[in-house]
Length: 87
Image 1 (cartoon, helix red, strand yellow):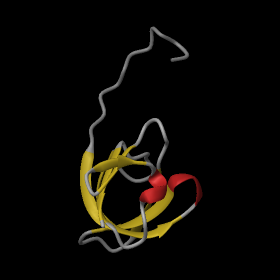
Image 2 (cartoon, rainbow, N blue to C red):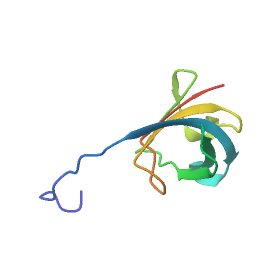
Image 3 (cartoon, rainbow, N blue to C red):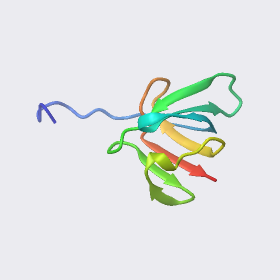
């Protein structure tokens, strides 16, 4: 931390499930939330985002188009904290 006296904030995670519609460089991916019309975009960070595919810890490169995923995030334009996908 840049300032060790700064307060830690509590994160209010929102769990959504959806299908990955597009993948990109550096852990970027788009997904469509179940029952919603517009695809959302997310960018994962290596240290921050925990990724699991089929129950095993892995890197974001393992996420492919068409996978069903559960995503824990704070809302649009935020970095997911956890992504769990099934093949």
